[in-house]
Image (cartoon, rainbow, N blue to C red; front, top):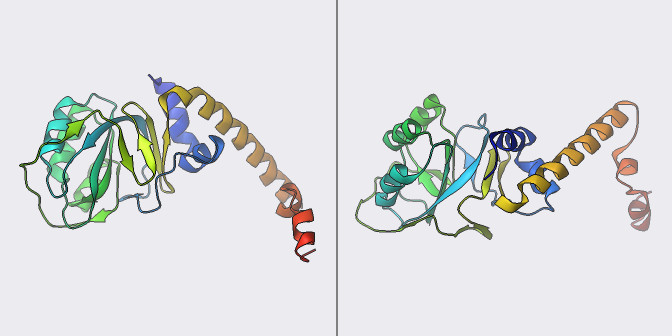
Length: 212
């Protein structure tokens, strides 16, 4: 289990830095974005596999998730229904869930933003859902080409989402801190007159293409 300090570190480092630092892996596709670009998120995944246009399993999941969890829901990318809204948001916050990632849509976006609850989704849909279809919780799910296991750490911000396997949290943080230090040095060097092409060792590549 990741510690609170580790989660805070990952959240502060940010999704893009963590993605690059762990070997350019774990990034969810560009369609998964926050409805409020100011939010930042880091927490263990409580996975939910549910049917399109049905939110029975979401009502079940908020009963079973623990404080600090991030609900990570595969709603099959269905765009013509919003299985999550303000009522489920209030319920989730009441039990301590810290965010939602859903491969699908939500509704009541303004109210969710006012509540300050981080939600990452594919879009918004005003259409309602049924409450009739069973599904599964705490099983591996895939969003795009990224496999997410229960307990994997989800890192999200304006740039997008990155998944950190639970057994790689320490190494991801260490690599991210190294990357942060390197980029701080690059920013300082640029301020002193250096060019990015030189800092990144691109001179030979540019010459090879006749761009020197």
